[in-house]
Amino acid sequence: MNATLLVERVVVVTGAASGIGREIVFAMAGAGANVFAVDRDGRGLEETCSLAEGSSAVPLVLDLLEDGAEKRIVERAVDVWGGIDVLVNCAGVFPSSPALELADREWDLVLGLNLRAPFLLSQAVARHMVGAGRGGTIVNVASAAGAIARPGVAHYCASKAALIMLTKVLAIEWAEHDIRVNAVAPGLVETPGVGDLLTTEEGRREHEQKLAKIPMARAGQPREIAETVIFLTSDAASFITGHTLFADGGYSAGHTFRG
Ligand SMILES: NC(=O)c1ccc[n+]([C@@H]2O[C@H](COP(=O)([O-])OP(=O)(O)OC[C@H]3O[C@@H](n4cnc5c(N)ncnc54)[C@H](O)[C@@H]3O)[C@@H](O)[C@H]2O)c1
Image (cartoon, rainbow, N blue to C red; front, side):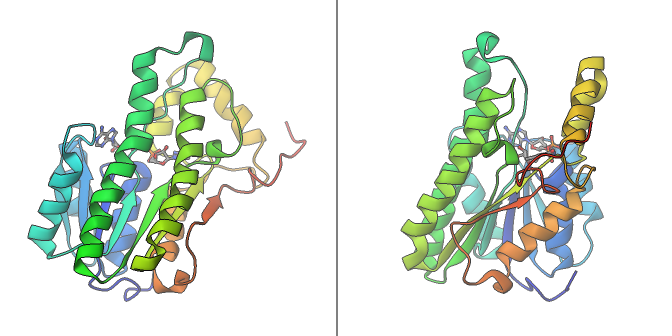
């Protein structure tokens, strides 16, 4: 990683205690950014911040579904670092239930965390950026499942498809304020969250079926998604906004006949 790519930028990352979010913190700190790491998992968050090398990472333990979470994040980040230049909305959940059995509570949880929370936080951060008058950039961690339908995850697919569209609308509304808004859409990535799905025979079978559909014949590593986020937030992407970059080993391009 180029250690000067994001030097002295202030970056807020949600979902920072695990998986992709944790790697984004590592990559951002390695690129010289001052990171504000947010998650509800205090232990995981402390570990992320203590393992980050490069510039500093400061933890904020907070449940993104709590009322006013977005205001607390902005206030604390401004207190600690004096402003916010970059927001990465990474926290997300991906439970599965066939649509006929999907409970409304699970629907609300998935849409609440994967769509409503990133909108509210983007809005609060963008208000701060507009007030500060120095622009900024936002990256939403969507999913290939926001473009390619998958059975058993109607709520998840709907939340990520909506996040991709939200990314476009915010990009065109906020371009005049010099705020770029993009998304990264990972395919299957090896994270603790995905590991939790491998505890049952059915989960392991589904995992094998997913792998068989990926042209590059492997799952991605969190680091590969973090590098994509670094690109989108850096000046190397200064003319890119409203875009969703698929980092999925070719999954969204088409499926192979293997398996
Ligand atoms: N792993 C994959 O294959 C994959 C593929 C496509 C997209 N994604 C997306 O990437 C993102 C990260 O996924 P991951 O696999 O790293 O997951 P993960 O489960 O390893 O990490 C998710 C993090 O979000 C945090 N979180 C959950 N609910 C929260 C809440 N209410 N408030 C604050 N924090 C909360 C968790 O504590 C955890 O640290 C998600 O948005 C997911 O949809 C993952």
